[in-house]
Image (cartoon, rainbow, N blue to C red; front, side, top):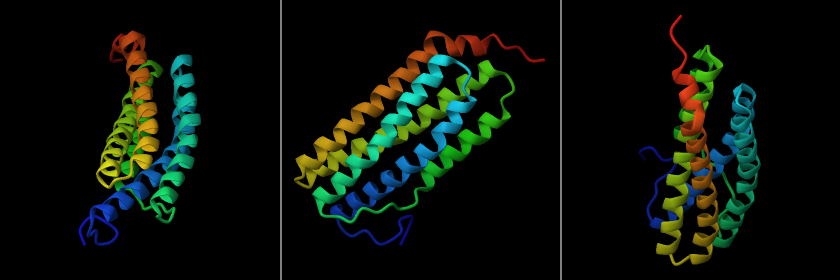
Length: 172
């Protein structure tokens, strides 16, 4: 049976399983983002994370639409990958003492989440096209573009000040 919750025999099975995976991931991300926002100290970072929380809450509905369009039951399957990324984010942010370093760590952890989402949405869109579902692909690609934009915004925040501020912190 492997790493999946059931045997996957066809590309369609793989597509639906991965759709269930990202559906679970989005719901877990919605639960964890408020903690990241609460720990962030830079106002621009707080705003970027808050904006992305609103976007992420909105990603659930298009996913449910893709399930319906594809004729699959709306269902989440546990995703150990996102659970691990979010657990690591919580652990790392709990270990950082200086707020400036913490903001840099939060960006890194948020980007790990974004990169996971980008891989999932990119793969799902490609598979949807392969399965003859350009309608599903179009919905997935819209979310993919939002994830890429969020990642770029985080990169910009890191490179235009937050990382430099963190680098000024010296060991005590």
